[in-house]
Image (tube, rainbow, N blue to C red; front, side, top):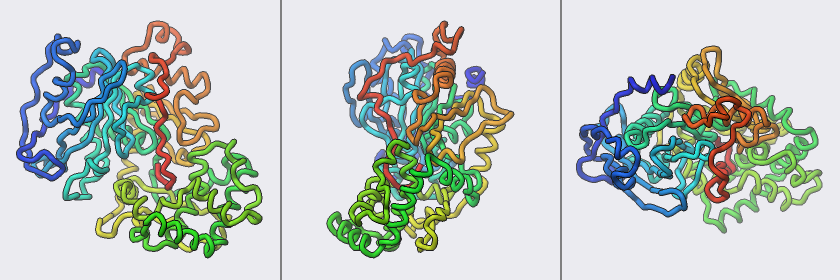
Length: 488
């Protein structure tokens, strides 16, 4: 059992700060681990939970926000810039904590990007009726070291961030832990499990791409040739093609749009490159965020559509602000990782003929040239091999019509109690609730079991599994990264 394995995990030495505790790097020293938490403290009655959290070395409060039935904290946690050399400097990483009760399980959530500072609950958190810790991914502002040494942005360093947060909070939240995330967050959950397999009791990963061989992307091409219906594909392909046929008048419109909004294109290199990047994302972005039923919103006869209709369709799906400097800046850490470790799609789109000038542009084109990048092809192969051979209590959920699922994680013969499930007709927002009835019950039962809170009736009959907490329209709003660019 994973829980038994954790007995071998010694709590890591927490790194304290000396001097400034802001984002600027300062000297770090090894602090003694906090002493064992008493049984009285474990039940949450001895000391206020906020005081217990803030007693963790390196943890500081930004604000507490009220929410009925919970305590919600926005926090900063002092992390080493380099976990291999913690004395080389620190930075402040943003953490949020939705506290319900220390007697409940805890879900560790990450989007792989920024963290929201408003209370929300991931699907597994609702299923197990638990606490939730959410972590901002390193180098997404404000959780960025200053100055930024980009060589310290990699999947092992990020997993080590999670490991330190878990190690610190596990002394308070002693029950079972699950990790979860969607898209890049689902990738992040997988990488955390690969490097620290004894930390979590289960992994729930949503719509997580797995680009094992970056130069081999034919799976995406096959997907786009067959997804949905021919009528829908023809509509999308026609609009995308017209946007390149009418490049001259539509780029004039783009110039006016950019001038009005103060957009610049230094990173992409030119307005023309940015324009084409938006257009090239159009078909992919539709299937990522839309449903087959949304095809009715796409002009049926693109050749007869007005320039404004073509513009509006591209803008509503791809977003003409996406590849302006102002749209790219926030996502520099993603493009850096895509171009150094994660990989990225390079799709052909043959229906465009010779209309494309640049093809699918690589991540290097969307990162400032002052930041050096070199791709590491062995990193994703290592993770993929590990999942095939060692996945234990891991659930992957994908959407049938989501292009990112074309290259997915597949636990192999060496895995145990692990599953891959697909939401019929689902997009990049696929979740357990959208699965077919049998898969939904099986997945829910597994999550409850891994969290250690499966009711007796569910243990006897997994078909009876359902979330333990009632749906809350505000707290359980779905978190889908709908930012239009081709990003997981």
